[in-house]
Image: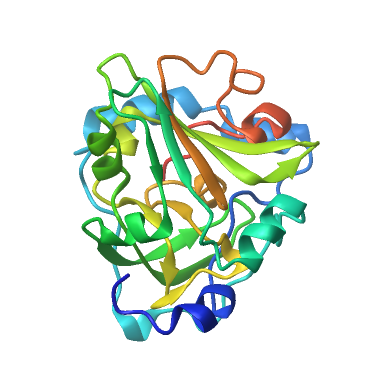
Length: 251
């Protein structure tokens, strides 16, 4: 892996860190959620009609990085399986890439670090109303999907995580357009250190033109699918299914 400190110390502990997969105390009232999210389809359609889909989110200078990032949502998956992976320095962790692909993959952290890397300093915007700026590094999701030979029939990419909500793994999804955005990366580092537990070790999604709850942590599986039917309750993500959040969440 590039430009990082000693693996044994940094992998379990380092860095100020970043946000999480979902926001836990966000908009609690159904009426507020309806006002916030009722324009989802119109917003998504207008944004895609009027803008360049490869347009980049703003990037910042190192001196603009936030000194502290909150950790909300899952702070530790708390399962025996995750604890065992962490105790072993994630040497036995593998990211499964499957579904509508020609070449299913099982990638180690070493494999992830050997892929072409992208580093970006971007702002995380949480639906709770706060923002913070940090540096992220990892391969683009698009490069991983191309390596797996994602099929034309795949319209969505689904992310399955190590943390449990209601006894089942946390999940999120993107459509194919956003999965191949040049700033959509699988980040293993923040602020030039390996992710710590609270911020999603060993791997998390960064999708910079979306609100923070789309940035799934503790990644275990990336699946290419033709439809979101059968994924949770069919809306494409845990918060979308259970708290009526906007699926697209574009910013």
